[in-house]
Length: 208
Image (cartoon, rainbow, N blue to C red; front, side, top):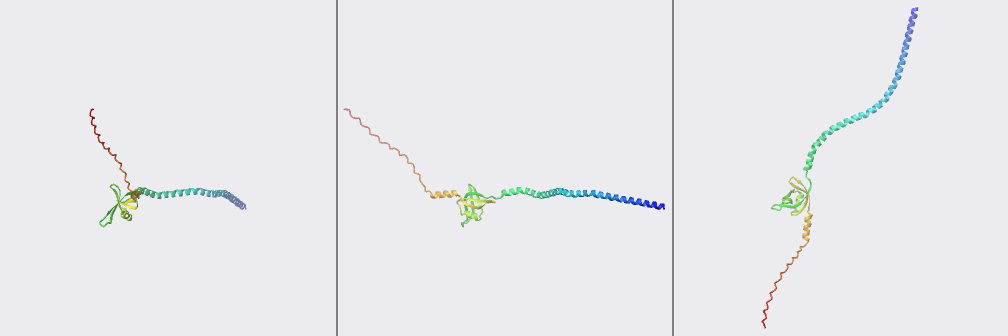
C-alpha cells in the first residue's frame, strides 16, 4: 500500500515536471517566434533596398561588358580603315581632275580629208593629244582657232568635257575686221634752201 502511494507520487511529480518543461518549451518557442518576426520584416524591407542598390551596379557591369565587346568589334574596322587610308589618299591624288586649258586646235587629216588626230597646242613644243570621242570630234571643227577646253587626262591623252572659243582671240578678230586701217601721215621733210646766185662785181669807175 505504501509502495503504491510512493509510486503514484513519483508519477505525479514526473507528470508535473513534464508539464512544466512543455510549458517552458512553449514559452521559449513563442519568444523565439516573436523575436524572429521583426528580423524577418527587417530583412524583407532590406531586400528591395539591396536589390535597388545592386541594380545600377549590375547595369554598370553590363554596360562595361557591352563597351568591351563594341571596342573589340570596332578595333579590326579601325585598323583596316587606318591601313586603307594611305591607299585611298593615293587613289584620290591619282584620280584625274577636270581642269581648264587654253590653246590652239591643230588637226591632222588623211588623204580623204578625214580627221585622224586632234591636238591642243598650249605653248611652244607643248600640246595634248585629244581623245577622239564625240567632244573630240566637235573640237576638230575649231581647227586653227584658240579655245578654252575643260578636260581631264586619260593616260597620255586629253578627254574633252567641254570647250569654248577663247574670248580674247574672238574680240581681237572682230576688232580687226571692223576697224579700218588708218595710215598715219608722213612727216614732211624740211626743204633745203637753194643757194642764191652771186651778184656780179661792179667794175671800178674810170678816174675823171
